[in-house]
Image (cartoon, rainbow, N blue to C red; front, side, top):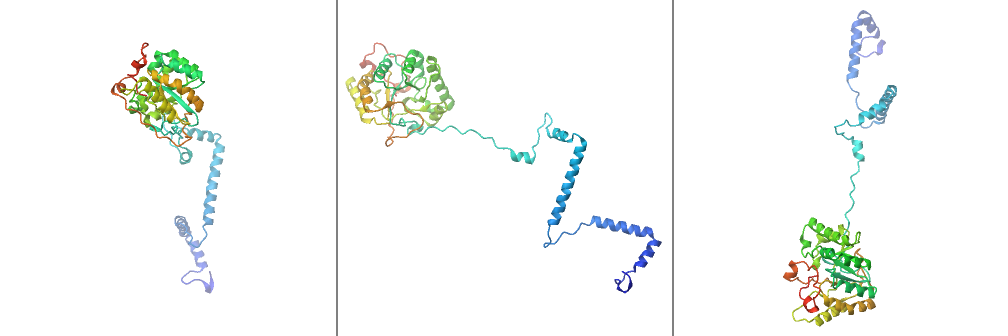
Length: 370
């Protein structure tokens, strides 16, 4: 400013101009230093009451300008995009490091849920009812060349379908009987290869091997035969055994009616044995029951079923278990406790073939457990 209104201790403008004429180098240096100070010292940030929108807009504008400049440079390069994509590919022999964006979009591997075991009220969740109104007849430990054909004949006479729990070694010895069972429309059940009473305590690999060996023996007679059920000898199921059988496509079959046709107490005659078996079945059977019996080395059982099959066919709907879990039609019965096998029955598999000359009295002394 000039005149009387200039600031105190300042030179008039005319004095500056005169100095500039006399010392141009000094003035130029002063301007350069002033410019450097203005560039080096950052602008003060706005106070808390100021609007930051202007700064944000300015930053966004600068970023957009830089992006546009890069795009123009890429287009002018004539192939920069392809080069960028090639650079994005990992070099052979190295491991590419994913970008944060790529890592965020990776989904975890989904594993198929484990198959649930159909719930049952028996040991290890085995089935003790058919899951419906039908009553199931089951025959264990065969096939037997003497007794199985007699059971098949009676079942055919009354148009009844049953479930045969086959021992693998017996199936190999009598493939013709396996074929007869299947041809008549009956259902098959795996009963281990050698009537192993301790299979439930073995590890999963040994269980799986035994079950596979038994199924293979059955399918040697009938290739492709369906085997929907498994029954542990003696009813000695465990959670592990039921799970392995289920994983192999077989539902575990227990029972709720056990006439103990395999048991021969001292002093019990054949006639008394037959009467006891008949009375137990008639007393305990109800809709949904699974009846345990044997067609191996048990001639008294055949005699009892000459009376039982017509009675059961008249009073119940006979069929096979559903194998898909239980929906008891009455109150769930208490699972019977299997008889403790005798030392001889616990340590030996059933005989290979019933003696052709065996009479009811002699064949009733060496019965296997269920």
